Image 1 (cartoon, one colour):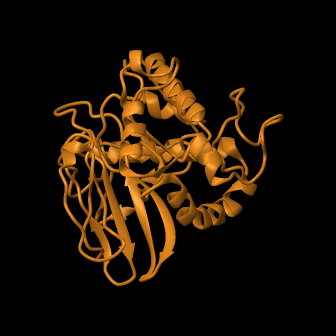
Image 2: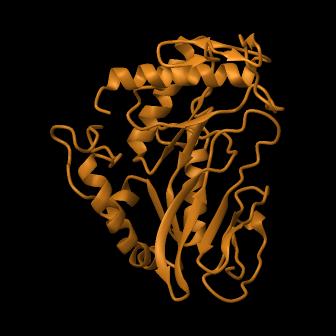
Length: 299
């Protein structure tokens, strides 16, 4: 578990097996850790190759991998594996977006800044930022009481030093610090939409040096857990980037989970539309093109 070189070696061989399984009609693998198929008699003959049944219809298979330490950036960027980051501070996001694009370029792949990457943030909607902070702060603080001691606070100080490194903070972050880092978006719908549009804005409208999310696609969850009057549930904000073909319309969605009703999802393709399940009762509907929230009863 503590041998990073051995873990990397094992991971790369596992991925080699997976690529063969997805992409080759029949295949074999004989490496340090895996011997497929094994050299044993099979129904009266020696089996030399195996197949994946059923094979994936859409090939190459789209793969996504979480990015934390960045130690596998060169490996995944060279092989077209897409990266996911979540609850990272703005400076860390910017560093990873540039590092992934540069790693892909070294492997001969030309990507836009932010292409093949997924950006995940924590989000909570309320009538005001103060109310959103009040409601989600207990769950936020409980989460980081566990994460922070293990070094899982992906924020950077004003000098770009990651938290936990010499000279940078090394403590449990507050929710307000997470908001300042733009790892958490809390407040009324229009404020959240404006924050998202700022990230998506073209270079002349964006602070110099910040990564751009050119077009959004896919769904990747950043959950916020809390307890409501009808039992514990969570809300997720799904945000991914970018779309490499077809429509460039962003798609955002929220889901809620309750003990009684399970998961309820809503998704729309209107520009910057956000959907959510209301905390109680039948909600109202408003035009997604205005950037407003569609709400409804929680199931």
